Length: 313
Image (cartoon, rainbow, N blue to C red; front, side, top):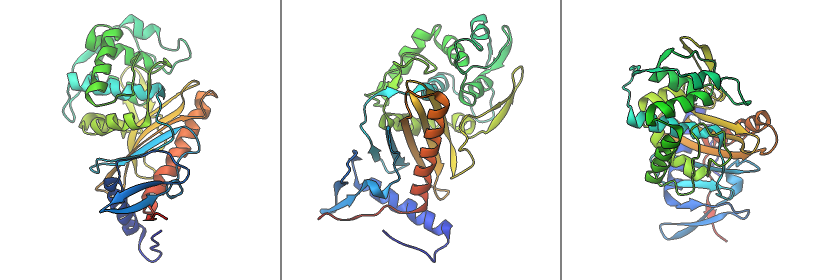
């Protein structure tokens, strides 16, 4: 492994990002392998081992450097429940159909009785809203993506498509268009365990989501004040640390903890990653803590040191 003890950290980070980009460009996909995975670059075999990347000890994960066009994966890429990561697709579909310019609030949407009734019902993540209130599209997107409100996910679905069922069909079409072949959406909020995906598929969505300026701005916000609701905090507590600028948490008992994340490397490149199925079948809180810790270790490892390559023996 390349060692740069006398070089400033900022330079080491930049070098690491460039070498990571080169490694990603050279590979097609890295499946999990305890012995490492051989790749071929300019006709010469190279090896990148699992030990070079601080992968989570369980579940599955995937990372990519924006612009590389390649994905590194770890763990079996089988569909698993993704919980509130589904809300990234919900926001993506809403903003695709009702685009907002930076700083624009968008149309006002009436809070219906169903959204108000669902607050606090069933042990879901929700926010208290008042029927008849009219909140802007951007305000509702804040409530969707920061405190991860399921009642707002369903409200936006009804507003956009007339019913949650019709909206879910739009989510599935969007997934198909993005090449997310191992993803199934059955609800707008992700509370249903039948809403499943893989880490690699979630990166396909993350790339497109982070190209939407309004969505990118919202997921990088630690907290916001929404009229009629009050101050809401982002459940992604990694924001502002380790270069993290997004994206979305998700946790239920069947799903465990999940985090779809975006982190800056050297101010130029954006590192995207997904960590899924951490501490599944425990509690949502335990799973989310595990996903955040695993993601932090993965991000810090990728930002702090270049990947090690060597000839295959």
